[in-house]
Image (cartoon, rainbow, N blue to C red; front, side, top):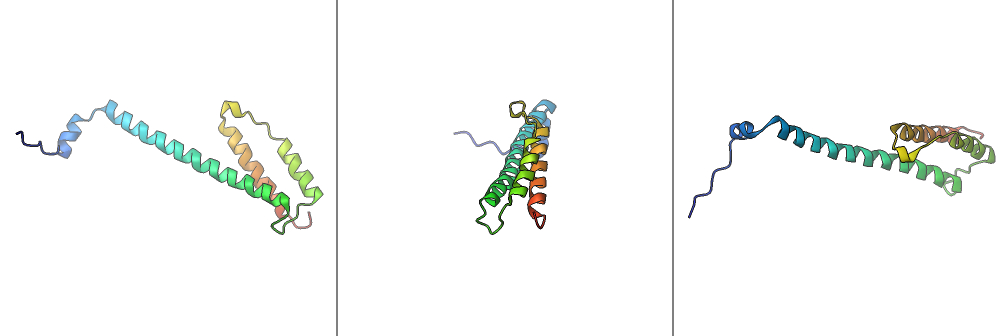
Length: 110
């Protein structure tokens, strides 16, 4: 029966490592980080839109007046999104819209 081989040392692993292998590993890590960033960004934007939708129901004690609704609709209708292209610019536009919508909702007397 053969004796099990000892685990390779750090030096042996470094010798076996090649730039191509290192690149593949690090690109895989970057890919995972990209997916995590995208998930978190989508979650944050989705939460903002959900809160905006909920505020229009008036159940949370914040009633959206007709004027407030018109102002938010004007902002919403200025969005020029092209989701099929997958542009970061579209995500930024949505994020800015959500911020503006909440600014309008927070203004007293509107």
